[in-house]
Image 1 (cartoon, rainbow, N blue to C red):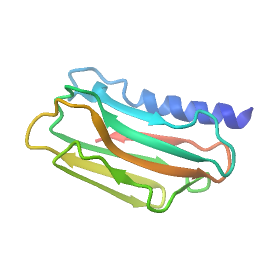
Image 2 (image 1 turned 90 degrees about the vertical axis):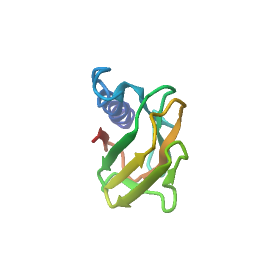
Image 3 (image 1 turned 30 degrees about the vertical axis):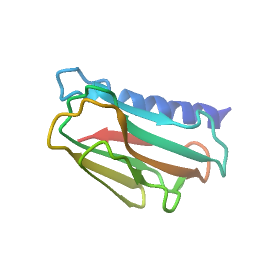
Image 4 (image 1 turned 30 degrees about the horizontal axis):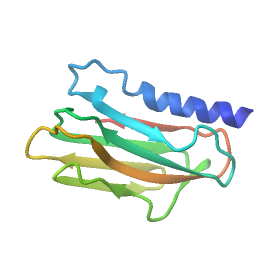
Length: 131
């Protein structure tokens, strides 16, 4: 039960990071989805950060931080989408960063970046921030 509550709280924390007004650079058009709302040790959670249609974003920078005692990045799982003309993701232990830019405002939806985290032990949280 504790592990379920911890993971649900982590997901809610992800979504609460986007409680920003619509005048704040269209951050309300950013989506974060997770493949699992409950996880056990050894499970792999897929996280996808995307953008809704007509977001009008020209540049985007975001980063996800996670506790390496609870999660391990699955090697080779970080994938960038093709929605921006330029998109690059980098990762170091405990942090994944994405930067994307386009020559014009985005009017279509799609994935910016996706990756997988393996659950090492329950009770951890992940946090996504927009720069």
